[in-house]
Amino acid sequence: MLKKYFEPGALFSFPAYRALLLSGILTVIAMSAFPIALAVTVLDAGGSATTLGLILAVRVLSGVVLAPVGGVWVDRLPRKTILILADGFRAIMGSVVVFIDPKSISMWILGAIVVLMGISDAFGGPAQGAIMPSILPDHLLPAGNVVKGIAFKGSTIAGPGVAGIIVVSLGTHATYVATSVFFLLGAVLLLRINEGPKVASDTHRTTFSEEMREGLQVVWYYKWIAAMILMASVQLMIVIGVENVLLPVITKRDFGTASVFATSAALFSAGGAISAVICIKSKVKNPGLVSVVVWGLFILAPLVLAFPNSKNLIFIAYFIAGFSVGPWEAFWATQVQREVPAEYQGRVFAIDYMGSVGLMPLGMALAGPLVNVFGERELLIGVAAFHLFICAVVLLVPGVKQMKSSRPPYTPKSAISS
Image 1 (cartoon, one colour):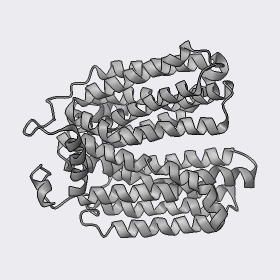
Image 2 (cartoon, helix red, strand yellow):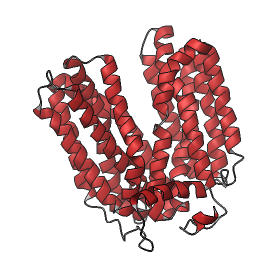
Image 3 (tube, one colour):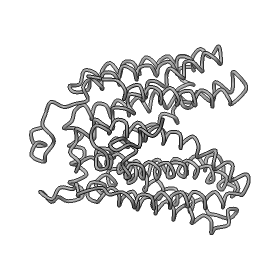
Image 4 (cartoon, helix red, strand yellow):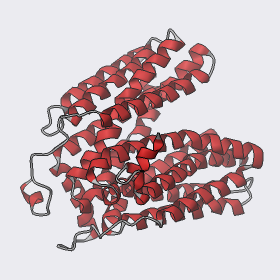
């Protein structure tokens, strides 16, 4: 049954894609396992929950702030090189903790390690998206992006479990060693990738700051890309940030167990995977329209939390809400890879990373105060309505419905007229 996927011309017949996928799985498992070991280390060293929260938040912040810098280097250097350096750097940072007594380690040292981990995310994330057109033919990009997305989501779920088992059985030092080994193996697998010719443009030489600004110009040139990144930024902060905080709070309070939260999250992921597969199997004329309309299904998550009468109803709602992210897995990265010239994709994916990650922690931090101001049920209903409103507004932007611009591909000269 699986043999057809390895036949000549099929997705897994491309060695570079297989190497990227396996490397990414190992890296994501290690990245999601590392915070578990870090949490144990911080608490063992006498740190408080506030200290732990600040240290974990710093990783996100450093990745977001340095994303534009990472995007420029992703467009300047071979993406394979960036990925190898990022994984190698993570392996070194993960192993540093092994040589320090966990009970006497300075919170400043841990914070510095986490900041450096976040910086590696700023380089590795954009490179993962930008390298895909170099290793797969155009017609396989949708399937390649979806399989990669599903595999990485599964790895994100598996990582904390792997870390928990190692911490309990062997201790935190062994967990840091394991994450470093995973990062190192990920880097070694990338050596097999033949990325092809250099994509960086030699036609014009600019300064580093000019290249960073040019990344913003490229995003603005493709109005549909700018609109969708802005939409995601606002919704992730106000809607998903609130939902992520209140899901575990409400389900634990009303049902007395954390299993409802865990099951809901798992069903959401399952719905997203099924939806993504359906989308790549379907002939969709307007991928943007489908993505935004189906994205509207996410309102089921906050609405069912506003009226948490039944565990089964929550499970059903979260499974259906999961379908909302499937079209994004199937269409977003692929359309960006097709629309944006290769030499600018690193910067575009870096800005996408900033929009996707940057404001969500703020929304999570504001969830509690907003509940105090508006009330829990009122807030959940409000964010659901806001979600639909933003979805409707973004469809008015030219090119969003098709995820395609009517303008010619971006060039430095075209920026002047935009």
